[in-house]
Amino acid sequence: MELKELKQKYDKLLKDVDFDNLDLGLKNPNIFQILRISKTEIRHSNFLAWLLDPKESHKLGDIFLKRFLREVFSSEKFQDLDQVDVEGMDLSKVEIYREWNNIDLLIKIDEVVVCVENKILSKEHSNQLSKYKLIVENQFPNLKKTFIYLNPEGESSENETDSYQPISYSFIIDSLERIISVYGESLNIQVRYYINDYITIIKRELMGTDKLTELSKKIYTNHKEIFDFIYDHKPDVLDRLSRIMKEEISKRGWELGSESRTYIRFLSSPIKEFIYYNNKSNGWRKKESFLFEIVIYPRTNKFNFKTVISPSDESYDTTRLEEILRSIDGFRAPTGKKWLVNVDKKEKFIYDEIPSMTDEEISNSVNNFYDKITPIIKKVEDKFLQHSEELIKMKSS
Image (tube, rainbow, N blue to C red; front, side):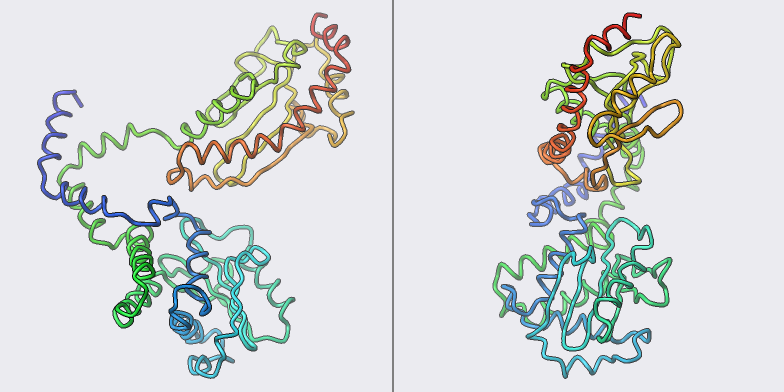
């Protein structure tokens, strides 16, 4: 697309009254968007736990809890429980647990325990539902047990269809809208705002059913070419993460080495003089014999830090270099045949949250990880300095 054509299409977009209405609607404050937690699974679970607890500050009492339990017990999967059982329960004694044994929500009341796995954007993985079911069965052998798979579309579990009852976020919306309709005037005004904001964010971010979403679809249809052009040239979230990670590496005085889009490699200043640079290609652009490496791999939702010895010239003794590293406390025999790894440390990082995070929040997460790997880097520095003469000799041979 030529610059002149792009400007014409942009001018047409700005003159579209629907675009003004969308802009106005998006400027309405929403607490979940302000806090950048609209797509964060753990925050949704936190808010639901707050709503479910009759003793919490919302002053709803057990209204939402009752509706939720009635929906749960209406399933034919749980034959020893029924909706009418809710009326006989003392809901004032309910116990709501968050992240108990990694279970998103656990509701314990009378002789019943309800296990809730909450999925927003991600899917179930690693047989986690089966694992949670086994934990609940072992911990509460004498209680009646129900298992819920809460997700935007109410889809069934892939692996635990018979045990987990799917519930859609549409039910959450309907329940909260009903509560606002009936009890809205008697609610604390802030609580009413919070619930309305939550309804809006579910519709917009999870269900795609709010008025602004429908309006945005109309605008896209009428201005498809310019939006497609913008989308094709938008910054990649991994590029943003990689940029911040490299910036923080430099701030710590570490020096970037050979790298790629998903591999960040570096050296610390104390060991740079001991690193051999190969005469022929070894797969790294700068041909280093050793680097610290961080793997950015969204599918795992982890950072992965490694010490890596590369394939090197025949004249360089990589076997001896590996022996020196292996002698460090906590280091292991190497994995890999060509690329030798003595340390492999993983740290959880939810890549799906990057779009809703500020640069400062990403930097904080990155630096928390860097703090954890710094002692490993220091061990390598100390060991290299102990063998400084030998390493210099190996490098120059």
